[in-house]
Amino acid sequence: MNEIHPERGLAMTTVDLLKEAALNLSKVCDSAISDLEKTEKVAHATNPLDYAWAHHEQYLEQWGGLGAKTLLLGMNPGPWGMAQTGVPFGATGVAVDFLRIESCQLETPPNAHPKRPIIGMELERQEVSGTRLWNLMQEYYGSVERTFANIFVVNHCPLLLLGDRGQNITPNNIPSSVIEPVLKACDEHLQQVVEVMGIKRIIGVGKYAEKRARNAFSAGKTGPGVTASGREIIITTCWHPSPASPLANRNNGADWKNNIIGVLEEMQA
Image (cartoon, rainbow, N blue to C red; front, side, top):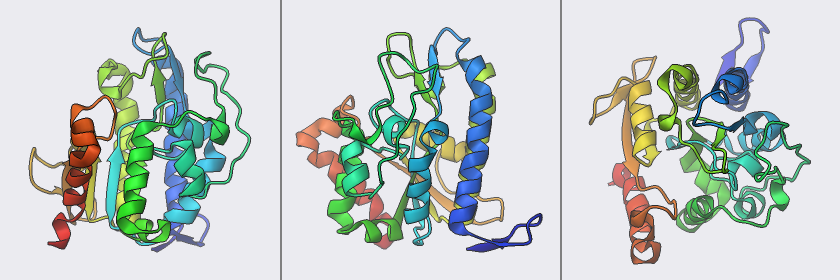
């Protein structure tokens, strides 16, 4: 996709537009951090689209323009994945070996949790969810190029949200008066990604992500949503790969794999 930017008079590629949308969302999230940290729930809120932009930009530049029409939508980063790599579900091993993200020096934000420093690609601990998801994509599609010709992955909210003990806080557990402006910006970012890429189907990785997609595209509890340009968009869900989910662990993960593959193949039937 190419689009003429009205102010610059230049043709912008899909990747250019994805980068612009991500940077705009990042600014909104940065401005919300102080209010988020005033709530009882959130002790530390940090933004990987800011301090790890050098990694996220590589992700968009390499893989955002290969023609994917299915979007896998996550919730928000965890401390061992996107928080370190700037990539959705970005366990450091798969970020380097499969996604080919070159390591850049990152600085730990001054408001980061002291028990969750930003180490970057050198972090040895591997996020289980990200390892499971990207390894399955590699296994199913065969190569990174073929993966991104079919699917793209975005987190609905880019903020890492931690409690005072360093525990993950999900956006739905934050007072709506504080989180709603952020979620509105996240919905708008999702709408932009769908338009820019010509996405035809969103798969929410877990029920929360599906709910956010349905909200963004005015969809009911079932059935398709509608984009700003009037296109119908299919919205569905798959099981989340979190080790905290009994579904993800059932039959040593075999049932989870079958669930995601089944959802990916629904439109091919």
